[in-house]
Length: 201
Image (cartoon, rainbow, N blue to C red; front, side, top):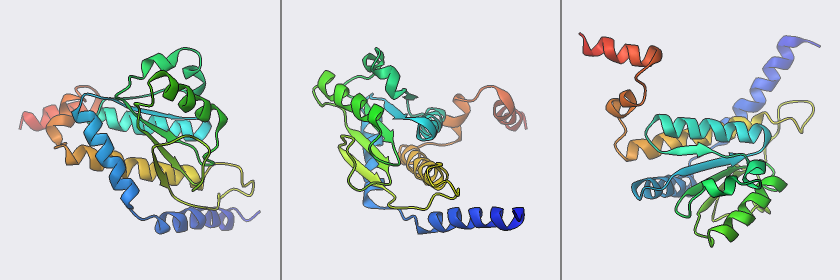
């Protein structure tokens, strides 16, 4: 295998997928949901299985770090008691490339039953006709995964990550996110040190 050629090809596939992404009304509606729930003391719950679940964890961590209360919950663990972590006013953001992930499907079905369908559920997926129950759909459409084994999540998780970051950051900034918000949530580490150094000058 020509390593340079193959690496360039993988990069090309992912770059082309990114270039096709466009902000849509569904992205903007998701931002409005996040803002509304947060301002009404609700939390943003993210979830997903496998690699999509890792992107869900990243989105939750980003939201928390910029002042929007959020945590990740594992779909399988919700079926063993963790449904009780999710209150009826919380917003649930699910990640599933196929839109048909069984564990996520079961989680949302049981959550609806527990909280009398009082949770708005946003689904971020590549499938325009998913089986996972949702209130609001964000889809990036059909894509080509960059591995020769096309079931390996690669391009799909890249797009999920970008969508999640755009939505999270825009939502926070629309609520007044600034350096002061960020500083209060990062008192330690290199970030905290940099703020302290700035204050001392």
